[in-house]
Length: 341
Image (cartoon, rainbow, N blue to C red; front, side, top):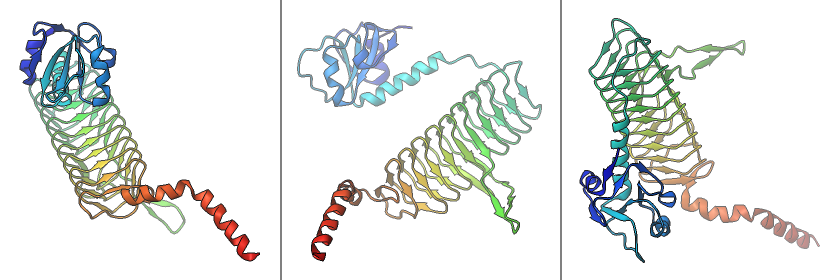
């Protein structure tokens, strides 16, 4: 499928500099651009590539000022990254498979299936489950009993959704994600064994939530584990029972959040962060990668780093001394020796 610069500019509200009839049929990174490809420039550190790129069309910000001649056609927009993302979404929708229900799927007669739904091979859908309109469920996924899945949600191959789970509209669950598995609840006994505590709650995903591949979200012991609207969760993340994550918070890969912790809105959590249970994290908090959170963060907009984590400015000042600690110890030892003499 080919698109002209004029068609693309109309789709993203941009203005053209160059040949409006230039055509593209595939996408490329700007440093790897080839004739017939579309690319974009959003990060200034890649600006060097725009002068030599072979890409036929490049989307740039309105405020981009070239330092020398550019041979490719430009489309100027307010935000090149967002515009390119919008085109990727359009491209993905154009490639979408037809909404059909495979004869190899297992769907309980009591389930309710909406309009224009795709259900792939070997999908299992349980009793009294409701699937909304325009939702896609890819092969080998399992949806338990009494689940509710909204409109325009995409569930990729191999996802497991346990009973009673609620998923909102326009959500995305990537391959291998597990929603609703038991929380880690065990009561120690006098004989040193552990008795399992039944986990009878559920998981609730509000609208526009994205869950990465092989991420696990445990059902609540009682009540719900809740992921609020707009949350984006990366791959390989563990979210324990009764956790609540506020609107538009983003969490990078390999983070673990222990039970009953409440995370605020618009937070940014780096990769490999560990958060212990029963804490409260305020709105707009930023947590650097590999931080260990052992106490609540009550300051809105706080930025923390380290393990145990504390203010990023204090951490960075302290880090100067961490790196020189061996030299400091040697100096102390030398001073002690001289004092003894």
